[in-house]
Length: 433
Image 1 (cartoon, one colour):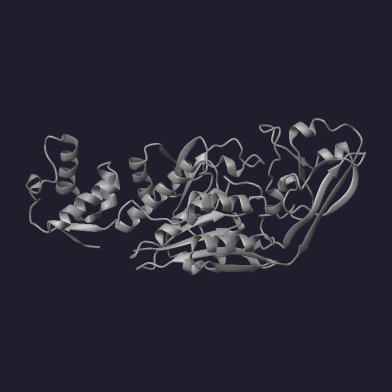
Image 2: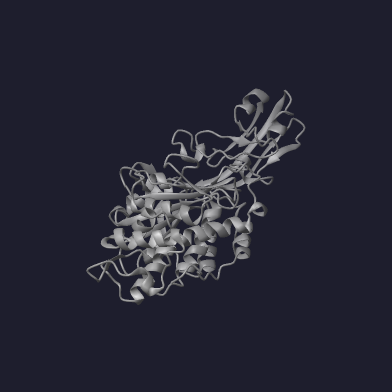
């Protein structure tokens, strides 16, 4: 196995998928989710299991909402002219707003309008009505660009929101690649940010390519599972329904906002001292532009649910932070940067490479072997010789794994793995576990 992973899913495939689905009504439970998951299954080329959670069912206090499908929504002025509508952009209506048809005065209307002053010409996304038990379907809210809001004069306005609401099923998509051991690495991604791409959707695009690539590895040590779900409540329901299986997970990685942004970050786990954190630490040796950040920082998502004190699955999060279009209608497919999404793929597959090749070795001789005899190093390259001397004399002890050794000598895992492969070739080490 090497770092040149095969993936038959191209960047163009991912962009076409984004274009097709990003403006759909992608909230917690809608008619637009099943075809989205169908397309993911077809593109990745792997079976996708659909975990179904019925509306009204209680999963550890999280109540699955009804299906909410918008039929029509608009705001008109006193002359009957449409100011803005759902056709302009789907986040014109806050997801899970209640239905309303009324004429109201400007003062009341403004109390139901959500804006982003940093993006005055964009519609702004407000997730609260979908996730707040005290707001969902009990009140309504729309979004207007603040540039339009400023032009609203005193007078009467007509608001119309017509959404079909009935019992349905929340879906968590699950693509699983079995390994030689039961331990599972979970990739976590969201589908629920209507009309946005970098937020949530870019994580789906990344992991679609990752799972396609992992499927080409003929012998896998670990089992890999991609979970595609609505943010937070999807994780809550899946964990509650599969608690005993989830507790066996070795770790998880959430990702979003990898299409573009200011700076690369890997967020550590809640504990910050787990095996997943060792992987994150070594990533910074291979990708020096990545910074490590604490668990409760930057954009927060499903890693919180998986790595809570209740579930305690060590979870990382890969993201670029910040990006100016966050939670607005300006988060569009054409802004996705091929190099950025490609780098996220390289980072994630580097982690997979470490997972698949991290073993413990012991030396077979009663003394450290003669390093220069096997042409593996030269004392003319002082840094390289110093690293290999430390590996042989200090750490290749049958206790430290290759990843632990790499982190102790501050070298990329790949370098230590290649050294170990040469040592195996000359029968200088044997695998312990």
